[in-house]
Length: 406
Image (cartoon, rainbow, N blue to C red):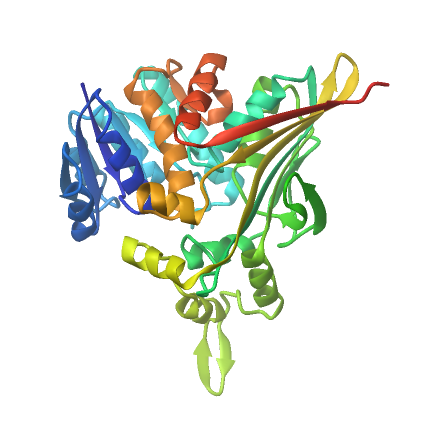
């Protein structure tokens, strides 16, 4: 029986905690958060849980709360990754997080590298640290490796996320608007020919054809996958030459317009004698994502405009000397179905459940490799287990392989 602590019980952390409560091999779930009320609220809904208030800026507080734990799940922003990793090493616990960046004091590539560079510390203690475990990054990485194993050599990896969950009530993003706007205003990273290249925000807009939903406008978007996959290209991804992460949807179109107007800037602007930061105004005025069941129900009662979405991993390479493309379409419940199933949003359902499946691998002793690594490094049997368990949660994948005859 294993004791697990979830540090940060927001939308994703709370989903992980609730799923852990159902696992037979888990003896206790510690719900830890700076917000005591949030921790108590989640713990009160569970059978095996207790709530703990802690400040994750203090490593000793994390260590004290995590004593005796087999696994620390880090559900916090990436700025806290080093502290939670330090605590895991001190306690002798395995470690899991959902993202490597962005962080406030490092560029994106360096933020990923500093996590991976701790691999020897975890390996020396016989521990596993699995980073970037959600839907994207996370499940996207598992699907990428699955696709790469279908070809002999890999030329290109493209990850596409299109989000058109749009309600009559104005909710532009189903996660933190501040985080969403900051991500979209950032300069994306593209991996090409052995180098990481920074490109302008909303770079390379193109119409892309997707099965079932038609053509959609997609642009480059800052994300972990091009970084980890570029760093691991030769060892795990058959020498891939190019990796892109691309995003699209009404939220992106809104953000792009605001960006072009200068409204996503962090630089102070003098307006009628008052200094303001445009991004602060936009973040303040943008409605937050509904968090509680009654808020989500109110949105659904008002009505939905659309519930379209695409989650596609595309691997392009050669098989038996012929051009081959592997498309992996992932399907998960939309807002209406996710609320009916679990009383949460589609974003919490997909990302939270996808993250939990990695946690499930820890508590059921599926993971055997020691050290620190992202999901594209998982072994064949580990990836097979992950995808089979995902299907049980109605997270399904269609695989389409196209090969040029001559």
